[in-house]
Image 1 (cartoon, rainbow, N blue to C red):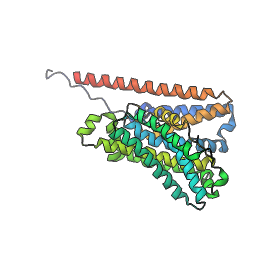
Image 2 (image 1 turned 90 degrees about the vertical axis):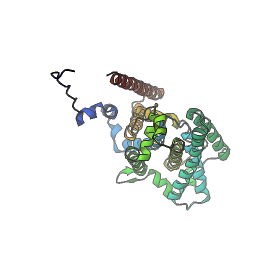
Image 3 (image 1 turned 30 degrees about the horizontal axis):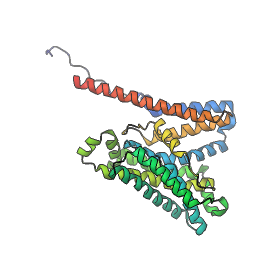
Image 4 (image 1 turned 30 degrees about the vertical axis):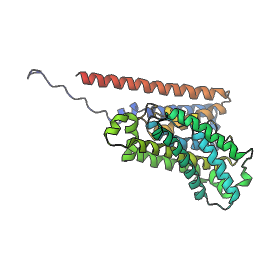
Length: 340
């Protein structure tokens, strides 16, 4: 370069509005608003206080499970066993209430958390220490835990009449018009959002999913971090089982069946990459809310039930396609930068 050649002017960093418009969460929020107000225009009762309350309650369990699933996905793994953990936790907690009607609600939540953490540790040991692929390990424990549930249940059922009124009121009650379950889930999401975004332990999950070899060189204990991620996912699923019992009041051996696919779909649609290292809890929460709103909108508009599954599948494919395109574009930019 000659002395007279002007130096290239560095590009100005994008302003706040530009970054907002580029954010994937912005598109999700816009789509959410479109579905909400579009359905309300066709049926004004869709946004009535009662309908909104039911919608939030229905989404709360999925949104809570999304927190743990997000941690696992950030590590470039997946946890398919969450639905079985929910079912086993729900029934055993119900049995605990039957045996001890005066059991305090915090003790029930701690029981679910401990049980879920134990089951999550099984997944973590298989993946971290046994080097079993997470997809295979958690698919296996999905059926193992469900089999244990069937064996424990033995054809029985926990009904609302077997549960303390205070526990049921906790599941259906509200504070200042906001359901208790929604407030609890929001608190959990806020705590984990701050943890993942600002604390070293949380950032290590991103590092592990982005580049495992680089994480090892950076001094991250990959085995311990992987184990802790699955324990967190299991613990959250255990608590979700207790809340599932409080929400519905009736559980049997099939409780929670199929939730794992909804949770994964919500996280991926919300921008959590299946390739690991990318995503936020805010986006995952919006993804859960978006799928819940779409399901309720289809019911309100009396559309056939299979449309809900078709739309979830289409959104999931779209989210994965976006992830692939973004990854390829980033790789091309890095390659061009190296050539320069």
